[in-house]
Length: 223
Ligand code: ADP
Ligand code: MG
Image (cartoon, rainbow, N blue to C red; front, side, top):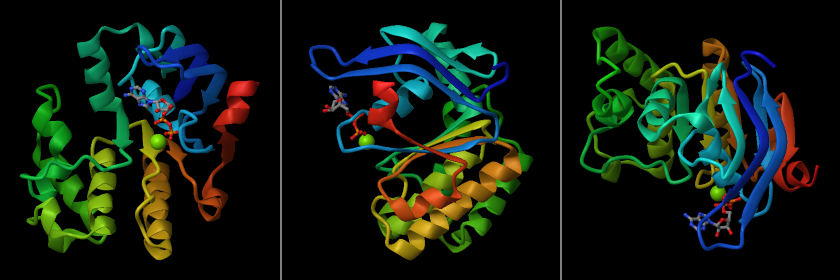
C-alpha cells in the first residue's frame, strides 16, 4: 500500500520486565482515512498509538508512515519525523503549565529547530483557536481554564503543524457529552481539510458513527 498514512506489520512490543505484549500482524490506514480504535482498559491502545507515533519502537516488525520506515530510524530522526508529520493528542493533554495557551499551541515550533515559527504559522494557530472557540483564552495558562478548554488547546497543538497523520488517545475522556461531540467534530473537520488520516482511541460508542472504520484492538490482536 504505497503512501499509506500508517502500516504496521508483524509488530511485537513488550515493556521491559512486564508480562504484557502487544502483537499486531497487520494494520493499514489509508491517507485521509478516519479510524476509531476501542478496547478495554489495559489492552494496549495507548501503547499502539505510541508505536504508531514513533515514541516507542517495536521489538520486532515494521511501523511505516508514507514512505518512511519509522521503526528503522534512529531516535533523533524519528522525533524529527514525528514533529513534522504526526499530530498527537495525549490522554492527559500534556500542556506545559508555565506557557500560555498560544505558546502551548505553538510548542512544536518552540522545541524543534527544524520547524521555523513564521508569521504564517502564527496566523494558522490563531485560526485554529478561533475554530475551536478559544481565541479569548490564548493569553491564559492551562491552570486558569477548564478541562474542555485545555483539551481544545491540545487539539489545536496537534493540528498546527498540518500533520498527515493525527493520533488522538481518548481525547474526550474527561469531557461532558456536548464537549465530546464538539471536540470530535473539530478533529474530523480539521483532518478532512488537511487530508490527514485520523486514528482515535475512544470508549464512547456515540462517537463511532463519524469514523470510516472501527477496530477493536483485542480482535485486531487475535487476527
Ligand atoms: P490502554 O491504553 O488500552 O489502557 P496501555 O497501552 O496503556 O493500555 O497499557 C497496556 C499494558 O501495558 C498495561 O498492562 C499497562 O499496565 C502496561 N504499561 C503501560 N505503560 C507502561 C510502561 N510505561 N511501563 C510498563 N508497563 C506499561
Ligand atoms: Mg490508554
